[in-house]
Length: 420
Ligand code: EPU
Image 1 (cartoon, helix red, strand yellow):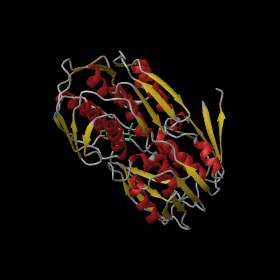
Image 2: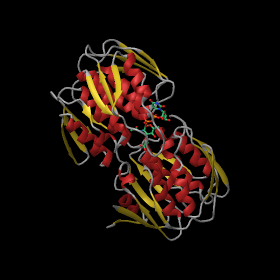
Image 3: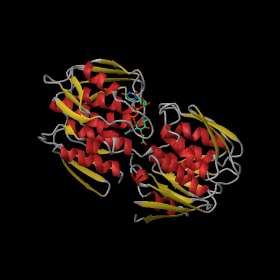
Image 4: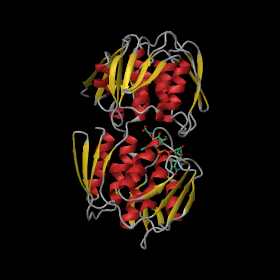
């Protein structure tokens, strides 16, 4: 198991290129299950979760070749229909194969993802939607067994809660269903738009992606496509927050600012100078970090995936702030670790009350989930002394070469192999 060791307190300076989006690449890879022929995906991030999705597709019988930020996926005549527990347990997004398998193969057997560190995360709305489209679903022995012998049919589906992968699963299912599917109270995340664009390029007929009502006219066939994955707004946001650490000045390249509007507004309130330039987003850290409250919400609100990183910044702001987490019930696991570094944070229900301290102090700490570990890296960069973060496999699920990227910006960060 690796550790990341950070000697904190250095301002970050320079340019950084943002990689392709994990949460767009995963559903787009799953969508190749719907297509015939070969797809070529570019701007693919090199991440553990992307490898897991590749293995899952290979298990189903697709051919996946990955090299240098590209993936060629051949999806002719695959026979599989099962996503086994061994793969699903390492990555919840495996559930994204459910809709495509049902639509293309008429059957699917997908392990239930179960709870995870940040919350229970049920998939009831994915299942209800597929049932409304005519699927027969049984949940037995930890697996979702679904079939649609005569194919799926279009339906009007209203989501009780906004769900990102739920919207994606049903949008993919609707692409090959008979008739029209309408998704109401759909998620509006930019990754949904990216998936809809890829599907439309493959021959689908989807309109309204990016709004809360998506209409999908089913078609008979989809073909392979060439598609470039959007930039990772969460990685981009993480570096924008890093650019607010004392004395820092960064240019975030290859990042469209629009998906980061909510964060940019908040960082301007914090006092950062943020300029949108042709090359990307420029951020200059404020002299004084002002405390600012945030409350997470589905897009276009403040992303839950950036909540932990924002908290690292508030931990060293001049005053008190409140962070309210409204999406997941257990997404404050970074708080205990920040407190070990000298932060003053109290949790009350779904709120964290943070009293900024003059400085955090480096300490041995442990990553607990993907975004929490990004928060700890930021805290380590801001802290005085040495921070050692263990269980960094969490961070490798969603950040490409994070230590190299921060080193390029002048941080003292290294990865060390630890033998137990
Ligand atoms: N929910 C239900 N029933 C469902 C589906 C969702 O109750 O059938 C609840 C969830 O428990 C949660 C809320 O609805 O409280 C929203 O969950 P959502 O389904 O939107 O989350 P997700 O699709 O499982 C995606 C991202 C997450 C990100 C969330 C919220 C992917 C692969 N994952 O998860 O990303 O936090 O949306 O924006 O796109 C990450 O990258 O670190 C990550 C966790």
